[in-house]
Length: 267
Ligand SMILES: C[S@@+](CC[C@H](N)C(=O)[O-])C[C@H]1O[C@@H](n2cnc3c(N)ncnc32)[C@H](O)[C@@H]1O
Image 1 (cartoon, rainbow, N blue to C red):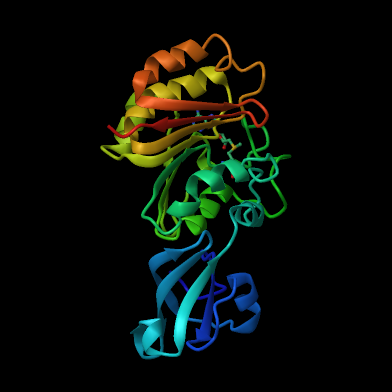
Image 2: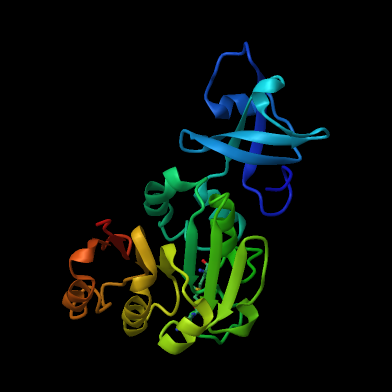
């Protein structure tokens, strides 16, 4: 992890003295805010806090040896989506994702997102006209990277302007409907979460599921966004999805927020 305030960090470090009574971290933020050179998460404490070792001039420190305990306050997912210009919070997905993932924030989660976010105006499913100000391709990948402090984030897109490499983010120029290209790019990789925010065309969504469902780890999720009422995953494709995942998944459709969540059961 990087120092407070630098790129790629969703963390605020808080140090308080051992005799000080524990309050909610939001209050502590105002009392004792410090800059640490880096933080290494040791354990989760609550939804948005972790207990962490931190680095100062003399190297890595266990906070108990120094002045007290270090909490690291982690930014809310909705704020991260907005910060990087993704429209996911505006589209109402944050409560779904936060409820699924809030206890995994410091785990080494591996997430693949189909649809990185092209800014080529005429491209199919472009972010032009949908993104928040300051958007660059990869907005949601950066939000996921900051949200999962120890996570590995992979993006897949068909447009060349979406390709980049950053800390804990890699991207592939691959069409989610092309099984051979997917297998060549991803090799034997498996994921805790696969999220389809690509073309939003139901045939493509179903093809992606067929090509990548086997890459979801047991206990993981395959999620498809933007299921509008006319989307055939609600209708004629729905029995096909059920037949395809069989007894390996529990399905959740939210018609209010147009999202399909498949959770792969652990046997
Ligand atoms: C809505 S944008 C993704 C936005 C991004 N997830 C975010 O929130 O910052 C959809 C992207 O899907 C890409 N796309 C469209 N069809 C695709 C396909 N078949 N395979 C992979 N990506 C595709 C588009 O090029 C576009 O960049």
